[in-house]
Image (cartoon, rainbow, N blue to C red; front, side, top):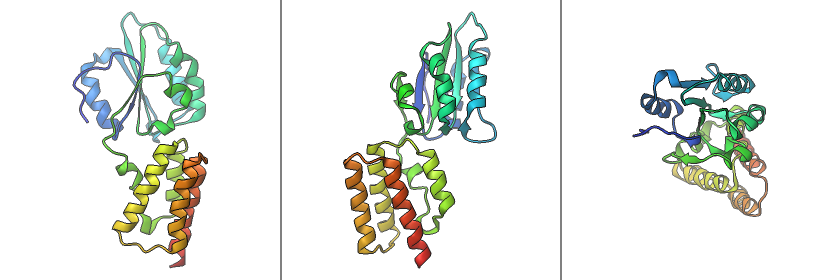
Length: 211
């Protein structure tokens, strides 16, 4: 992903690759006017990063200062601590959030900041699950990353998952096929997406353990 100009105002950027997007953007800014805040140990933006963000934002600047907040997952408590400063930033401070999925951003933040969805496709993230080797750890990581996945994204995921199963020539029982149909029906009826996906993925694990 390549950017051809700097982003001047507060934004949320939904991208495929956070580091690639960051490396493409930074050359448009003066080095002394940017700060990048991310967790160097994990892909989670946690309370420690939120605290560092607030501290940095209140360091006065006579020029615009761009603070990039980066993370695959943004913890809820971290976002809650940032709500006020994101809504009313100090003078000359511009926040730019870079992440992989809008589902990790609280609706209260997502609705108040301009956003650009620059992901080429969700297929790379969603279908990275290896169905034949699927285990509890894989399911946990997927659900953790997509805990705020919305109805439309969930339906797309279920459909893509079924396509991948067919492509890999994995035979499903009638009951398992019906579960896919039931999952989409429940999502259309506004059932909580994370609950529907949990049931579906755990069923696939149980299926693998049977054979």
